[in-house]
Length: 478
Image (cartoon, rainbow, N blue to C red; front, side, top):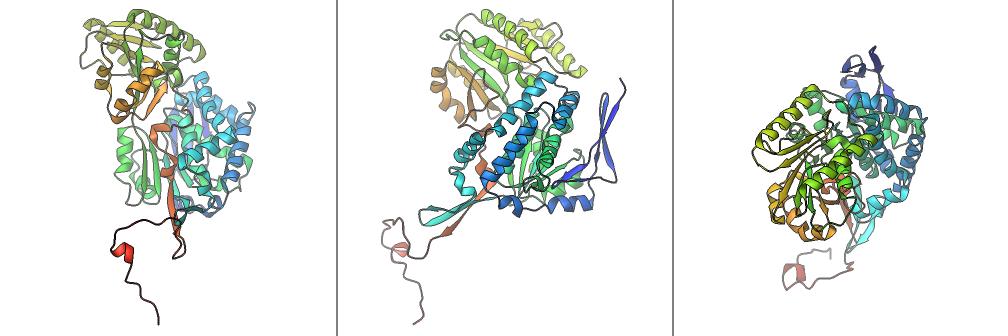
């Protein structure tokens, strides 16, 4: 197939800019050319207007995001067609899975009520972004951090959408560093704002940039120019930016995490259980930090569970075919298959290694080496307290069935670092009331306050006699 080249301009504050030099990123039959930053472009980015979006009401921001979603729900929208054509080729995901990923976040911004509710329950009162609200002996308000740098990972296309939306809902200016692994989803999302209105304050609060991981000059420049950083990625990415985060700059970290599931199979009466488990394994091809990698099963017939799960994984192959992987991925899966067979563990590999189930009967140090790509370990346990041996700060999401078991275990799990206890079969949809990795929108703003007039007391405290009670040291003119 002939190689196709796409040349893209920088997007800064609703305008397009060409650079003097370009990165050239190669993806099999596709090349993307993107401008390198120079001093002039860096200044334009860090000088983007902060007052415009600050002065908008939350209602105006949400209405604008809704207009953006209306473009994307049109299957003939040019940027949607381009993303659906090129996105899978860049990310390696199948078109079906890629479309599902993008759809998750588009649904979020299509519902105005949902966005209002997100702000309301994460900030405590959505009015705080627009108004000064009386609280005790003061009036309080929430100010945006200012300029946010978003370091986007490429494992799940929805990550960029999610991060950008949250920056906008809190009235921040957003500099979005694109991921080479999924370059176009966030880029086209930002560009679509220009199709709605290039002069709108929301559009003018966005910029898309790129640098490679060795570009220390740009990394340090932007780290030192921001009021906050939202960093998605693995250990090395988090370390690169965290060690350069200056004093006073808020560091919001979405680091390397994983998921697991705990099932009381003996007392489970859900006929769709194995199908729901298969869904959670299949969605995102296990690339998301909330995807389960191991199932801890108590009671019942383990082999029956495994065979029913196998049938479920086949069904989801039809709905969401797997993507394209490197040779190293399949070498890794073959290594695990042979190793576990040698150890006496029961392994069911799909013929083309599009998924693999490993029943753990003999535990060794290779047991939880994980290649992703719909690989799932199953371990039978005798007691639910055994689950705690598999829980540490790296486990983000735990799916539990039945719900009564979740209520019994939730305190033990969350004390060990788990931030979300999910319903099995629903892992990709974070329900209202919970937030991803427990990071609320309150991290994206500053709570500021103005005290009421001297002598105004909506509440008085019964302090014991002393300085606070008598307040004797105020001088007045005579």
